[in-house]
Length: 214
Ligand SMILES: CC(C)(COP(=O)(O)OP(=O)(O)OC[C@H]1O[C@@H](n2cnc3c(N)ncnc32)[C@H](O)[C@@H]1OP(=O)(O)O)[C@@H](O)C(=O)NCCC(=O)NCCS
Image (cartoon, rainbow, N blue to C red; front, side, top):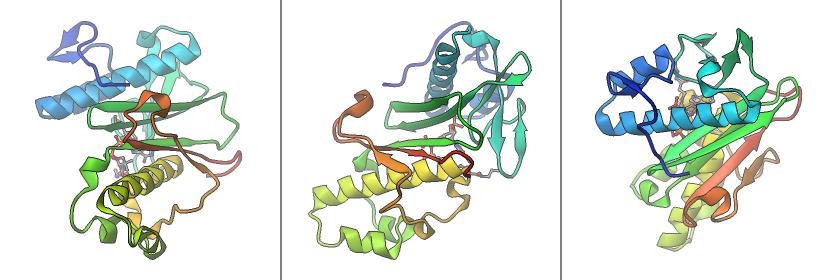
Protein backbone atom coordinates (compact mmCIF):
# COMPACT_ATOMS: atom_id res chain seq x y z
CA UNK A 1 0.00 0.00 0.00
CA UNK A 2 1.20 3.59 -0.55
CA UNK A 3 2.29 5.40 2.61
CA UNK A 4 -0.22 7.67 4.32
CA UNK A 5 0.06 9.21 7.76
CA UNK A 6 -1.78 11.81 9.80
CA UNK A 7 -4.47 9.51 11.21
CA UNK A 8 -6.21 10.45 14.43
CA UNK A 9 -5.40 12.99 17.13
CA UNK A 10 -1.75 13.82 17.47
CA UNK A 11 0.59 14.38 20.41
CA UNK A 12 3.63 16.43 19.40
CA UNK A 13 2.87 15.78 15.72
CA UNK A 14 2.72 11.98 16.17
CA UNK A 15 -0.64 10.14 16.29
CA UNK A 16 -1.64 9.29 19.86
CA UNK A 17 -2.74 5.86 18.62
CA UNK A 18 0.91 4.79 18.61
CA UNK A 19 2.48 3.51 21.83
CA UNK A 20 4.89 5.56 23.98
CA UNK A 21 8.03 3.86 22.63
CA UNK A 22 6.83 4.36 19.05
CA UNK A 23 6.07 8.02 19.71
CA UNK A 24 9.49 8.50 21.28
CA UNK A 25 11.23 6.93 18.27
CA UNK A 26 9.12 9.01 15.89
CA UNK A 27 9.90 12.23 17.73
CA UNK A 28 13.64 11.63 17.28
CA UNK A 29 13.32 11.37 13.48
CA UNK A 30 13.50 14.11 10.85
CA UNK A 31 10.08 14.98 9.30
CA UNK A 32 10.41 12.78 6.17
CA UNK A 33 11.57 9.59 7.92
CA UNK A 34 9.10 10.31 10.73
CA UNK A 35 6.16 10.38 8.33
CA UNK A 36 7.31 7.10 6.78
CA UNK A 37 7.83 5.48 10.19
CA UNK A 38 4.45 6.63 11.51
CA UNK A 39 2.64 5.51 8.36
CA UNK A 40 4.21 2.06 8.63
CA UNK A 41 3.39 1.65 12.31
CA UNK A 42 -0.19 2.86 11.85
CA UNK A 43 -0.66 0.50 8.92
CA UNK A 44 0.80 -2.41 10.90
CA UNK A 45 -1.43 -1.71 13.90
CA UNK A 46 -4.53 -1.41 11.71
CA UNK A 47 -3.61 -4.62 9.88
CA UNK A 48 -3.16 -6.56 13.15
CA UNK A 49 -6.35 -5.12 14.64
CA UNK A 50 -8.28 -6.04 11.52
CA UNK A 51 -6.99 -9.62 11.58
CA UNK A 52 -7.91 -9.93 15.25
CA UNK A 53 -11.18 -8.02 14.87
CA UNK A 54 -10.37 -5.69 17.77
CA UNK A 55 -10.00 -1.89 17.95
CA UNK A 56 -6.47 -0.79 17.02
CA UNK A 57 -6.35 1.32 20.19
CA UNK A 58 -6.52 -1.84 22.33
CA UNK A 59 -3.23 -3.22 21.02
CA UNK A 60 -0.01 -2.60 22.94
CA UNK A 61 3.29 -2.85 21.07
CA UNK A 62 5.37 -5.87 21.99
CA UNK A 63 8.38 -5.80 19.65
CA UNK A 64 11.27 -8.28 20.06
CA UNK A 65 14.99 -7.91 19.50
CA UNK A 66 17.41 -10.83 19.82
CA UNK A 67 19.72 -8.54 21.82
CA UNK A 68 17.31 -6.38 23.81
CA UNK A 69 14.42 -8.73 24.58
CA UNK A 70 10.68 -8.15 24.21
CA UNK A 71 8.25 -5.59 25.57
CA UNK A 72 6.25 -2.39 25.22
CA UNK A 73 9.30 -0.26 25.91
CA UNK A 74 11.07 -1.58 22.81
CA UNK A 75 10.68 0.50 19.64
CA UNK A 76 12.67 -1.74 17.28
CA UNK A 77 12.94 -5.36 16.18
CA UNK A 78 10.39 -7.99 15.18
CA UNK A 79 6.86 -6.60 15.33
CA UNK A 80 4.31 -7.90 17.81
CA UNK A 81 1.46 -6.74 20.04
CA UNK A 82 -0.27 -7.73 23.23
CA UNK A 83 -3.99 -7.51 23.86
CA UNK A 84 -5.10 -7.19 27.50
CA UNK A 85 -1.66 -8.35 28.61
CA UNK A 86 -1.37 -11.42 26.38
CA UNK A 87 0.68 -11.73 23.16
CA UNK A 88 -1.66 -11.75 20.17
CA UNK A 89 -1.70 -14.90 17.98
CA UNK A 90 -0.04 -13.27 14.98
CA UNK A 91 3.38 -13.51 13.35
CA UNK A 92 3.94 -10.13 11.70
CA UNK A 93 6.38 -8.41 9.39
CA UNK A 94 6.68 -4.92 7.90
CA UNK A 95 8.75 -3.33 5.15
CA UNK A 96 8.89 0.12 3.56
CA UNK A 97 10.51 1.33 0.36
CA UNK A 98 10.16 4.53 -1.67
CA UNK A 99 6.82 5.46 -0.15
CA UNK A 100 5.33 1.97 -0.17
CA UNK A 101 4.57 -0.37 2.71
CA UNK A 102 4.35 -4.17 2.62
CA UNK A 103 2.82 -6.07 5.53
CA UNK A 104 2.72 -9.81 6.13
CA UNK A 105 1.11 -11.96 8.81
CA UNK A 106 0.47 -15.52 9.86
CA UNK A 107 -2.69 -15.88 11.92
CA UNK A 108 -2.55 -18.40 14.78
CA UNK A 109 1.05 -19.32 13.91
CA UNK A 110 2.23 -22.75 15.06
CA UNK A 111 5.00 -22.60 17.68
CA UNK A 112 8.21 -21.21 16.25
CA UNK A 113 6.71 -19.95 12.99
CA UNK A 114 7.97 -16.52 11.99
CA UNK A 115 7.52 -14.42 8.86
CA UNK A 116 9.67 -11.85 7.11
CA UNK A 117 8.64 -9.61 4.22
CA UNK A 118 10.60 -7.12 2.18
CA UNK A 119 10.13 -4.93 -0.88
CA UNK A 120 12.72 -3.07 -2.89
CA UNK A 121 12.67 -0.30 -5.46
CA UNK A 122 15.41 -1.29 -7.97
CA UNK A 123 16.31 2.38 -8.47
CA UNK A 124 17.64 2.47 -4.89
CA UNK A 125 20.26 -0.20 -5.55
CA UNK A 126 22.11 1.48 -8.42
CA UNK A 127 25.40 2.22 -6.64
CA UNK A 128 28.97 0.99 -6.83
CA UNK A 129 29.91 -1.53 -4.20
CA UNK A 130 26.42 -2.99 -3.72
CA UNK A 131 27.35 -6.44 -4.97
CA UNK A 132 30.44 -6.77 -2.76
CA UNK A 133 28.60 -5.49 0.30
CA UNK A 134 25.36 -7.37 -0.17
CA UNK A 135 25.87 -10.54 -2.19
CA UNK A 136 27.63 -13.86 -1.74
CA UNK A 137 30.07 -15.16 -4.34
CA UNK A 138 27.42 -17.44 -5.86
CA UNK A 139 24.89 -14.61 -6.00
CA UNK A 140 27.41 -12.33 -7.73
CA UNK A 141 28.12 -15.10 -10.23
CA UNK A 142 24.38 -15.43 -10.91
CA UNK A 143 24.24 -11.72 -11.83
CA UNK A 144 27.25 -11.78 -14.15
CA UNK A 145 26.52 -10.62 -17.70
CA UNK A 146 23.10 -9.06 -17.00
CA UNK A 147 22.21 -5.82 -18.80
CA UNK A 148 21.93 -2.68 -16.65
CA UNK A 149 18.15 -2.84 -16.21
CA UNK A 150 18.06 -6.59 -15.60
CA UNK A 151 20.91 -6.18 -13.13
CA UNK A 152 18.96 -3.64 -11.06
CA UNK A 153 15.88 -5.89 -11.05
CA UNK A 154 17.87 -8.92 -10.01
CA UNK A 155 19.76 -7.03 -7.31
CA UNK A 156 16.40 -5.87 -5.94
CA UNK A 157 15.00 -9.39 -6.07
CA UNK A 158 17.95 -10.86 -4.17
CA UNK A 159 18.00 -8.03 -1.64
CA UNK A 160 14.27 -8.41 -0.97
CA UNK A 161 14.80 -12.16 -0.45
CA UNK A 162 17.74 -11.45 1.86
CA UNK A 163 15.97 -8.92 4.06
CA UNK A 164 12.84 -11.09 4.19
CA UNK A 165 15.04 -13.97 5.35
CA UNK A 166 16.87 -11.86 7.95
CA UNK A 167 13.56 -10.58 9.33
CA UNK A 168 12.19 -14.11 9.45
CA UNK A 169 15.19 -15.26 11.52
CA UNK A 170 15.14 -12.04 13.57
CA UNK A 171 18.85 -11.40 12.96
CA UNK A 172 18.45 -8.41 10.66
CA UNK A 173 21.63 -6.85 9.34
CA UNK A 174 23.53 -7.78 12.49
CA UNK A 175 24.39 -10.66 10.17
CA UNK A 176 26.58 -9.56 7.24
CA UNK A 177 24.32 -9.83 4.18
CA UNK A 178 27.14 -11.09 1.95
CA UNK A 179 27.33 -14.22 4.12
CA UNK A 180 23.69 -15.25 3.60
CA UNK A 181 22.94 -16.96 0.29
CA UNK A 182 19.30 -16.64 -0.76
CA UNK A 183 19.46 -17.99 -4.31
CA UNK A 184 17.70 -21.25 -3.41
CA UNK A 185 15.82 -21.33 -0.14
CA UNK A 186 12.50 -23.13 0.01
CA UNK A 187 11.28 -20.84 2.78
CA UNK A 188 11.44 -17.73 0.54
CA UNK A 189 8.86 -16.86 -2.11
CA UNK A 190 9.25 -14.01 -4.60
CA UNK A 191 6.08 -11.99 -5.04
CA UNK A 192 5.06 -11.75 -8.69
CA UNK A 193 5.39 -8.35 -10.38
CA UNK A 194 2.53 -6.16 -9.16
CA UNK A 195 1.41 -8.70 -6.53
CA UNK A 196 0.04 -7.15 -3.34
CA UNK A 197 -0.67 -3.96 -5.31
CA UNK A 198 2.97 -2.89 -5.49
CA UNK A 199 4.41 -1.03 -8.50
CA UNK A 200 5.28 -3.65 -11.15
CA UNK A 201 9.00 -2.77 -11.21
CA UNK A 202 9.39 -3.36 -7.45
CA UNK A 203 10.68 -6.68 -6.22
CA UNK A 204 9.32 -8.24 -3.04
CA UNK A 205 9.63 -11.47 -1.09
CA UNK A 206 8.08 -13.35 1.81
CA UNK A 207 10.05 -15.75 4.01
CA UNK A 208 8.18 -18.17 6.23
CA UNK A 209 9.90 -20.42 8.74
CA UNK A 210 8.86 -24.02 9.22
CA UNK A 211 6.85 -24.92 12.33
CA UNK A 212 9.21 -25.62 15.21
CA UNK A 213 12.07 -23.87 13.34
CA UNK A 214 13.87 -20.55 13.99
C1 LIG B 1 15.51 -5.66 9.61
C2 LIG B 1 16.31 -4.69 8.74
C3 LIG B 1 17.25 -5.48 7.86
C4 LIG B 1 15.31 -3.90 7.87
O1 LIG B 1 15.86 -2.70 7.49
P1 LIG B 1 15.33 -1.61 6.45
O2 LIG B 1 15.54 -2.06 5.07
O3 LIG B 1 15.95 -0.36 6.87
O4 LIG B 1 13.79 -1.44 6.72
P2 LIG B 1 12.50 -2.19 6.21
O5 LIG B 1 11.53 -1.13 5.90
O6 LIG B 1 12.78 -3.22 5.17
O7 LIG B 1 12.02 -2.97 7.51
C5 LIG B 1 11.85 -2.29 8.71
C6 LIG B 1 11.04 -3.17 9.64
O8 LIG B 1 11.71 -4.42 9.82
C7 LIG B 1 11.28 -4.94 11.06
N1 LIG B 1 12.43 -5.41 11.79
C8 LIG B 1 13.46 -4.69 12.29
N2 LIG B 1 14.34 -5.49 12.91
C9 LIG B 1 13.84 -6.75 12.81
C10 LIG B 1 14.28 -8.01 13.26
N3 LIG B 1 15.43 -8.14 13.95
N4 LIG B 1 13.54 -9.10 12.98
C11 LIG B 1 12.39 -8.99 12.28
N5 LIG B 1 11.91 -7.81 11.81
C12 LIG B 1 12.64 -6.71 12.09
C13 LIG B 1 10.55 -3.83 11.82
O9 LIG B 1 9.17 -4.04 11.70
C14 LIG B 1 10.94 -2.60 11.01
O10 LIG B 1 9.93 -1.63 11.07
P3 LIG B 1 10.17 -0.30 11.94
O11 LIG B 1 11.14 0.54 11.17
O12 LIG B 1 8.82 0.28 12.03
O13 LIG B 1 10.73 -0.72 13.26
C15 LIG B 1 17.12 -3.72 9.63
O14 LIG B 1 16.21 -2.82 10.25
C16 LIG B 1 17.92 -4.41 10.67
O15 LIG B 1 18.92 -5.05 10.38
N6 LIG B 1 17.50 -4.34 11.92
C17 LIG B 1 18.10 -5.09 13.01
C18 LIG B 1 19.33 -4.40 13.51
C19 LIG B 1 19.61 -4.84 14.92
O16 LIG B 1 19.11 -5.85 15.37
N7 LIG B 1 20.36 -4.05 15.61
C20 LIG B 1 20.60 -4.30 16.96
C21 LIG B 1 19.67 -3.48 17.79
S1 LIG B 1 20.05 -3.63 19.50
